[in-house]
Length: 317
Image (cartoon, rainbow, N blue to C red; front, top):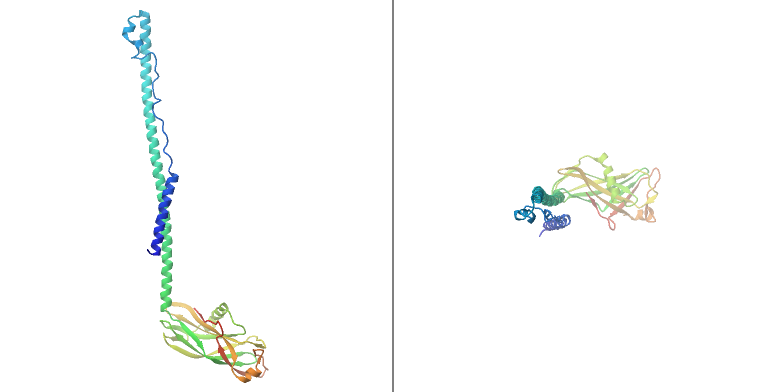
C-alpha cells in the first residue's frame, strides 16, 4: 500500500470511528410513554346494567319509589354516555400524542445522522483540499527538479596563481579563470567578476556583493554551451581604504541566465593567497601578512599562489 493510500485508509477508519462515537453520544433514549389503563369510567351503583335499574326490582317498589329509581337510572345513563364519549376523546388524544412523540424522536435521529454526515462531508472536503495541496507541492517540487536537471550549470575555476599590483591608491589582482557548463542547456549572458577582502567572507556576504554588482555589470557577455569551457583573464580592483598588512582573500564569481528564467544565477569561490616568490616572502610579508602600503610613487608587482584552503566550498545558485 502506498503512503497516500495508507493515509486515505486511516482517514476513513477515523471518520467511521468518529461517526459511531458521535451517534452513541448524541442519540437520546426513547421516551417512556404512559399507557391508557387509567382511562376507565368510574363505577357507580346506577347504570343501565346495574341491578338497581332492573325491571324485576322496580315492580316490587311503590309507584313513588319506582319513579325515583327510574329517574336516577336515566340520569346515570346519560352521565355515563357523556363520560364514555369523553374517555374516547382522551384516548384518541393520548394516541395522537404518542404518535407525535414517536415521529419527533425519529426526526431527531434523522437530524443527528444528517449532522454527523455533514461533519463527515466537511472533514472529507478538508482532507481533499489538504491532499490536493500536497499533490500541488509535490508537482511543484518535481517540476523544479526537472527544470534544474535541464538547466545550465556553470563551474568556475581560477588559475593556480595570479598577479597583485600594489599601487598607492588601489590594488589590482589579475588571474585567468575558466568557466565550464556541465548542465544540459546553454548558459546565457555569462560574465565574470570578483572582489578582494582581508578576511574570508561569509556566504551571505558573497551573495550580497554579487547582487550589488548587477547594476554595474548587467551586460550580456557570451554564451557557453553544454560541455563547453570558456577561458578569460579576470581583473579585480580594490580602491578602498586598506590596512598596512593583511591576509588577502580573492573571491571570483560568474553570473549567467538560463533558458526560460530571467533571474540571474551565479557561481562563486573564495581563494586564499600565498606569496609565490622568494623576494616577496622575504621582504613583503610581515608576521604571515602581506604588506600592502607603499610610497606615493611606487608600484609593486607581487606573484600570488591561489589556494582554496580547508573546508572551502563553492557557492552555486
